[in-house]
Length: 150
Image (cartoon, rainbow, N blue to C red; front, side, top):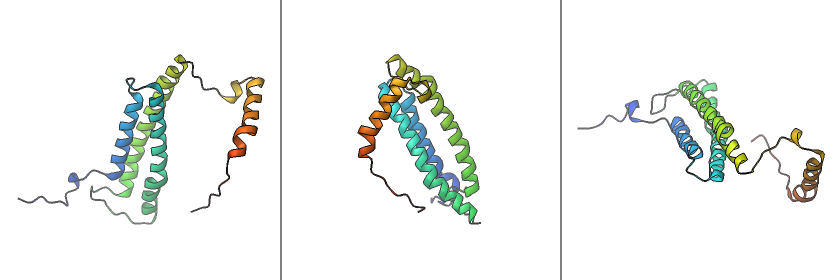
């Protein structure tokens, strides 16, 4: 007995699989059994992975779609179908990401005495310290880089 490997149901879409991996990383951020700062780190990893995913994978699908070609992958999905599925899953992922940050991690950080402040909420003394620290400590060690259109 042989298996017909051309059947789309035998394949998992590469892009959707990538988003599912990101969902599993997000689950680590949601797991209160992990140390708090590790959870924050996991949430940052989710954001980094998603940024790269859109910069590379989604941009590639958009390019294929906009070129007028509409090839189907081994999973049988066209670029347009993939983009719609990605949009739905990415929105779900980002909603969960925001809920994790706003409803779980920020309050947990505050309970540990770690606060994130907006510049408008800082007093003159704090702003003066930050500006001086930037000017004297951080700015001198930054190296400018050129970013071209490639």
